[in-house]
View 1 (cartoon, helix red, strand yellow):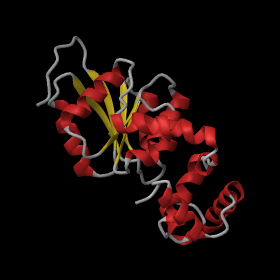
View 2 (tube, one colour; view 1 turned 120 degrees about the horizontal axis):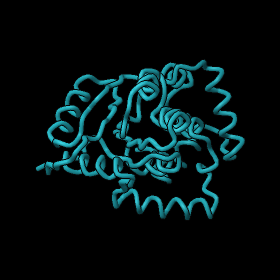
View 3 (cartoon, rainbow, N blue to C red; view 1 turned 90 degrees about the horizontal axis):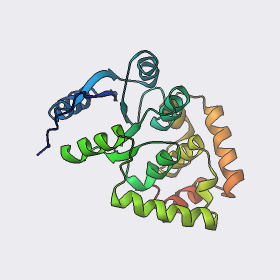
View 4 (cartoon, rainbow, N blue to C red; view 1 turned 90 degrees about the vertical axis):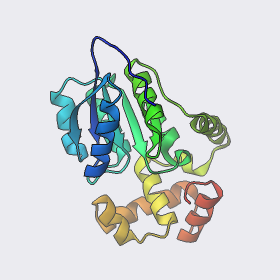
Length: 219
């Protein structure tokens, strides 16, 4: 059960997700907390940035997958506009895939979409008060991340977009499919693939897949 708090002012939250049913569910869940007010909603990054620029907010809760940008790209855009505005990332992707990258970019926390209401509300309250929400799994992943950096893990050399393209190639997506999904040309995707190969030394897509599976970067 969600604990209701009595506060002089509610947390003003922007929720970003392109699925109407998810938006409705999140809105209902957060309003039941009593101290959280969903003051705006957005279905894409462009709308979200417009809201950030024109609306007084205490917090942004954003999905990792949006139709025009990735959640990490939106996170960077928000931080460029308002560096102190907390952003919580909500995702269907396992924590080990994107949580560390999101936190490195300034996210106030990273939660799975199947999180229970009490945990979500607690994370929002922590972020709204200037803290961060880190699950035990993410804390362990952070520790492993520092080990990976110190030992020079290959995927840590990639930019956010390169890492995204790398994962998609590793799952068997064609360059055309990736281009359509990311709204970029096949030529651009091919350029990313070339840069990934230069940075990692991989020679073919099969090596992408083998490494990603070994590192638990894809299912």
